[in-house]
Amino acid sequence: MNCPYCLSEVDDAAVVCKVCTRDVYLFKPMMARVAELEKQLAEIGNQTDYEEQILGLEARLEGYEQKKYLDRGFKETCLDVLIYLVLPLLILLAAHDVITVVYDTKMVYLRVISMVLPLPFGYVLFKQMRRPLFPWFIGVIFLGIASVIGMSWITSLVDNSPILPQSTFEWREVLEYAASIAFSFLTGMLLGSVNYASHHQAKSVKVNPFLKLVLSALGEEKLSPEALHKLMKKINEYGGTIVALGTTALSIYTGLKHVL
Image (cartoon, rainbow, N blue to C red; front, side, top):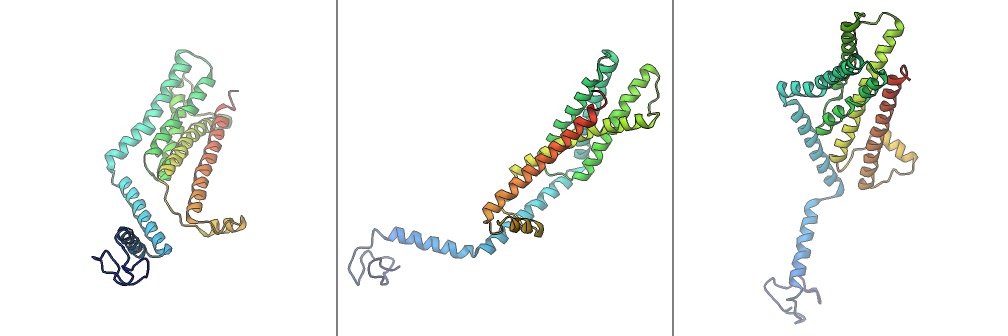
C-alpha cells in the first residue's frame, strides 16, 4: 500500500513510513478496505455487462416458472380444473336450484351471485403462479356456457320447458348471461395476474421499440433503469387493473340488463 502522507510505497507489515517516518498503523484497516472495494468494483465490470447478467438470470427464472407449470403433471392439472372450474359450476347450479326452485324468488339475486362467485376462483388461480392464459380462457367459456345450460336443465325438470333456447332473443339472453359469468372469472384472473406480477416483478426490463417511441414522445427516453422499472411496473399494474374494471363492467351489464 501507499503512505497516505507522502504516497511512497509502504510494506504491508510496516507500521511507520520509512520515507516520512509517520505512523500509518491507524490507516491500514481503512486502506485495506478501500483496496478490497476497488477489487470488487473491478470484478463487476461496466453497467451494460451487469444489466445483461441480470437479464440472463431473469430469463432463467422465467424458464423455471414455465417448466414448473409444465411439470405439474396430469393429476395436478385435473385438480385445478375440479377446484377452479367444476366447483364454481356446481355452486352456481346449487344457487340456481335454491333461488328459483326452492324459494322461487327474484332472478336478480341469482344474477348477482353469478357475477360475484366466479371472481375469487379466478383470482386465487392466477395469484399462485404464472399460468398460460389461453387454456384457462377456454375453460372460462366452458364455465359460462355449462352454467347457463345446467340452470336451464334444472328448470326443465320442474316445468318441462325446453333446455335449449327456442328463439333468437332467448339465445342472445343465454349468451349474455354466460358472458357475465365468464367476465367475472376473467376479472379474477386479471387481478390475480396483477397481484402475482407485483410480487414477482423483474428488477430490470427490456424496453420494446414501441415503448421507446412512447417514452421519447413523453421526453422520458433517458430514464434510469430504476425509474424505467418503476414506470413499467405501474403500467403493468394499472393496465391490468383498468382491464379488470372493464371486464367487471361488462359482467354487470350483461348479467343485469334483462332483470333490472
